[in-house]
Amino acid sequence: MIPITLTIAGSDSSGGAGIQADLKTFSALGVYGASVITALTAQNTRGVSAIHPVPADFIAAQLDTVFDDLDIKAVKIGMVGSAEAVSAVSRMLRTLEGIPIVLDPVMVATSGDPLLDSDAEQALRDELIPLADLITPNLEEAARLLGEKARATGEGEMREHAERLLGLGPRAVLVKGGHGESEEAVDILWDGASATRLAVPRIKTRNTHGTGCTLSSAIAAELAKGVALGEACSRAKRYLTGALKAADSLEVGQGNGPVHHFFELWKK
Image (cartoon, rainbow, N blue to C red; front, side):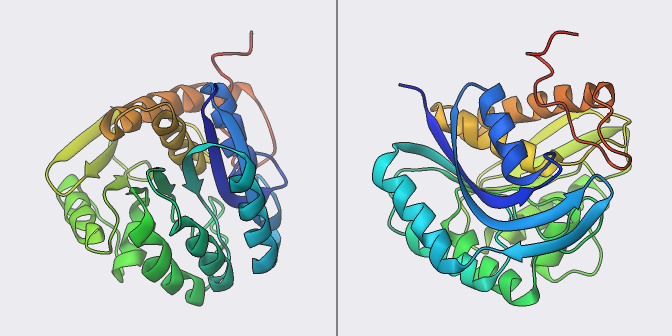
């Protein structure tokens, strides 16, 4: 039986991030993808022009229907949009046992457009983060969750932020350094007992739309297969690196284009 992974996130009308990126990632990595949509966005590779939140009761209905029928092996959470949506999602997830949850605390789009209001940020901290087996903030998100004005500027500060974020309740933290400025793209995984450094050469491309969604979805896909967390993060980072290397070949949009989710499957 094929592993099933559920994404709970917003829709990206340009197809590069959100639900669309998640489902592409699941397909590329050989798992079946189901989805619960929390918000509709009108966006393209240049920015977000409008957001339409999905009512919390309909989010709950989607969750109930999916879990009533499908044998979900892992859950990935992305954009939730509102405090009411956070509460609807957390109510369902609190009833689950033994299903790994990967939370990508999406707050701002690649374009810089905000995707989460202040009430939802607090609900994210209080209700969803404590339920997660792994959270995957980038440098800006990590600082914002901790109430810091400046993001981490080196690996030492990244580890410090990861350790402090673990105090919010997740079982592990992956602080992503993809938006850093060094020659390497370094992520720090902290599980409370040990730190793992995940590093690859930085890929020089402007086509980075959906990188955070893709990485967290890839981790969830590997966890759904039964892969241990550390190895799941390593495999996901290798997959994202390949998708970034091939991103320029897609030539999608006029702004920050998407990564190439199917770089290993589509023939040139």
